[in-house]
Every structure is written in structure tokens, then in C-alpha cells.
Length: 176
Image (cartoon, rainbow, N blue to C red; front, side, top):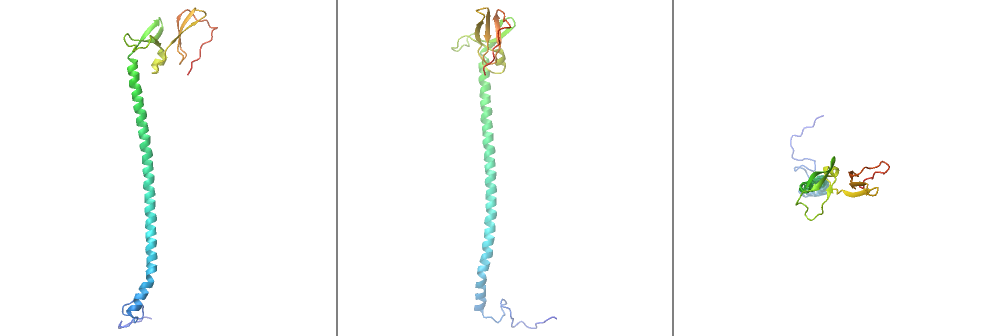
């Protein structure tokens, strides 16, 4: 069944401005709704705070990852710079030596004339030299002067300068 209202002079609802309630009652009712609205606003504020906190945490996480990446890149750059310095130092050092045949078939690197820079005359192991390592060959005599050797204490190379090595004599192991 439909109800028709011909005139809205008096309305029975409490919200309508044409209601029978005095304006003061309407204000009281609006004031009683304020805490509910405040709760709704507080919930919205709390939701926004939570959302902002998650954004801040995500930004901090990205910042930490960027810092870690930056640190790794800086470390890698330092490592490469050190490697470049080592290569340049080796190239400079390498210019001081020349390959020399100590005995037919026996090769070692010796200091070039005028490049001693205060060092005594010495010979470098050709094997270690090829690996960019400066290893000075040491003289040794075996079998009471019958065998004269140049020995690399790093890689174990033995260069026989004079005499013959007997197989009964054990070979040296390199010190590393």
C-alpha cells in the first residue's frame, strides 16, 4: 500500500528540518553523533598512518639495498684500482729485466745494465716471471761441488748450471 503525503508541513523524522522537534533537539542529536564521526575519522587517520608507515618501511628497504649495492661497487672499484696499480708496478719492474741464456737451454731473467737501483746482481725464475711474480733464484751445490744449481724456492724449478744430477738425489718441493 502506498502512502501519499500531500503536504510536508509536519514530518515525523528527527533529521528533517520540517520535523516537529525544536532546533535545540536537532543540535543535541548532531552533538551525540560527533563521537561516532570522530571514531570514523580516527579510523581513517589510523589507516592512513599505517599506509604511510608501510611506504616509509619500503623506502628504507630500498635505501638499504641501494647503499649495499653502492658499497659493493665502491669495493669493486677499489679492487680494480689496486689491480691496475699492481699491473703498472709489474710493467715498471718488468722493464728492468731481460731474458738471458745462463747455459745453453737454461733461461732466466737478469737485471739489465744500469737498472740495479742498489740491488745486487740476481736472476729471476722464468716460470714465476711469466706469472708476474718476482722470485729470485738461489744458488745451490750438490754432491760436494759436482752439481751447481739455480733453484726457485717458490715454484721448485731447478736450473742445472754445471754437472749432472743423479736420480738418487731427491728433488726439492716448492715452498709456498
